[in-house]
Each structure stands twice: as structure tokens, then as C-alpha cells.
Length: 68
Length: 321
Image (cartoon, rainbow over all chains, first blue to last red):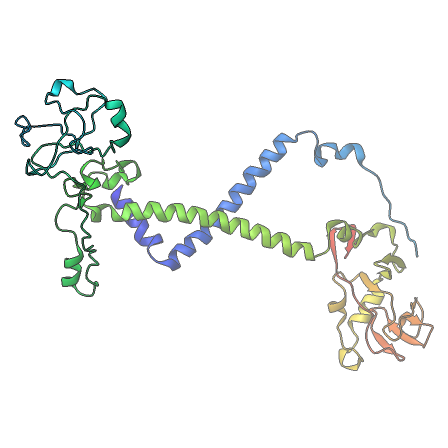
């Protein structure tokens, strides 16, 4: 454990440049995961109320008309 | 006055009346309310006429000025205590300039305060009876033991600290990015406006060789289904002879479909399709001739007809915008 934390500290946290890089990279992955999770939570909470669930009821057959 | 040995007597009465009245020389006759006492030391017997007991003390009472003086012991001075104005000494302490003067200022013996000549009280330092609080709850686990070497756990302790800070920074970066994205996207067109700004055209409705006009963003939009003959003609045009040199392959993604904005580049009239000297478009306002690729060939217009952004999502569909 002590060896691992020493490695992590020296590789990532010791220098400000690597620390900032670590933050930026993990922010990228955090964003992906966080938004996937929150999106799936939203979809499961609103099941049956979303547009993709009611789309077939409201479908209109629109034909484009030459108005000129 | 033999009983009145001044060292033994506890009670005397100052002779206010002089020798007048009856003199009784017995203590037992003293009425209880005559407690007024004053005594003087070393008074020659003869010079002081002492009156112990007055038979009619009621008469005497107005004359007895009570000057009470209770003596603790007979050896102490009677009489009012003399107050001597003593010089007050307040220690200012040395001005702290050097280690020596600092040392002079430091209290090196127990502090004491004198409030009276007889009473002395000591000021006690608080540290002798206040318990030192237990801070072990606030200490890191690695250094809870006072004998632990802090240097050995520095990396793990600092790693944890930076991990917490870094996690906060990740959250802050995510929030900042969301805010900036929100702000920037608020400046672009909203989704409903973008939806209105597009037009979908079913290409199977347009026969070959025909030019169809739509309205797109308030402007006429020409969709021309070109024949193979027209395509080969436009492809073979020498670009160097053109006023606005553009090859046909630069103007049409698919050779058979030509998409143009039907506004003459001269003064903005709408050209007429399938007319003019070059088989393309002709502007009736000032006589600009465009070919079947929408390029200016003759007349006052300076530029070719404009090509809007468009794409073919599938074989049969054209989306402009």
C-alpha cells in the first residue's frame, strides 16, 4: 500500500503539471461516465413519457410541397 | 484606682465628667449598655480621673461620646491607625530589544500580589490544573502514534490530500465545462430555428431534365435533375475561359443533381430556368446567362449562382441547410 501511494504520488501529484493533466484527463472520463449514468437514470425514471415512446402515436406524414 | 492596672483592664471609661458624680470602684456595677470603651496606655493615674461606673447612667448617656475601639490584644496600639502614604511602585518592565531584556521581562518566579500588609495571595499558573485536550481524533492515522516517524508516511498522507483536492478539481472542471458549453450554445441558433432552416427534398419526385424551385430561408432554391448530356457538356467546359472559374465537379456533389440558390448575383432577380444562350438559367432583369452548372457565362452578373450547403442522407433524399 505504501509503495503504491508513493508511486501514485510521485507520478501524478508531485508536480503541478502532472496534477493538472491528471485532473483534466479524469474530468474527461468522469464526464462520460457521469452523463451516461444520469442519462440512463433519467430514461428509466421517465419510461413511457419520452418522445421515443409516444412517437408512433404522433407521426404525421408530411409531404413537401412546391410552393414556388 | 488600684484595680485599674492598665495592662489588665479590658474596659475603661474615659472620664468625661471629671470628678463629679459618685465613683464606684466595682466592675460588677457596670450597666450592660455602658459598653463604651476606650483605653489609653501609660496614662499616669493621677492626671486622669477615671470614672468606672456612673450610678445614674441615663443622665450620663448624652455626654458619652462613643468612640469605639475594640482592641485585639492589649499589646497593640489603640488609637486610630495611622495611614502612611506609601510610594507606589509599578514595575514597567524593560523594553524588549534583546534576548537579555526579554529575559528580564519574563516572570521567573511565582507571581504574587500583595493586597494588604498582612494578606498575601499567590497567582497560580493555569497549566497546572487544566487538562490537555485529546486531539487524536484530528490526527492522521499514520501519525497517531507519537513515536511514529512522520517522514515514512509522508507520501501516503500527501497522496490522500491531493486525491481529495484532485477529486474536487475534477468536479469543478466538469461544472465549469458545462457552464461554458451552456453559455456558448446559447449564442447559437436554437434547435427549432435550425429545424426550420432545413429542407428535405424527395428526389424521386423530380424527373430528369427538370428544374424544381423550393423556398428555403426566404430564398428560391433550384434543384435541377441534369441529363447525361448536360453533365458531359458542363464537365468539358474549359475553366480558364470562365468569368468566375469553377469546375463543374466543384459545384455538384452528385453530377446529376445541381442545387442552387436562385438569386442572380447581379442585382438579385430570380433567373428563369432552361432558358438563355447556354441552356441553363437566364435573368430577365439585365440579361445574365448562366449555364447548366449555374456559372455566369454572359451578361452583367459577376459571380456564379451560389451553392447552399446540402447533403444526401440516403439515395432518395436531399437535405439542404
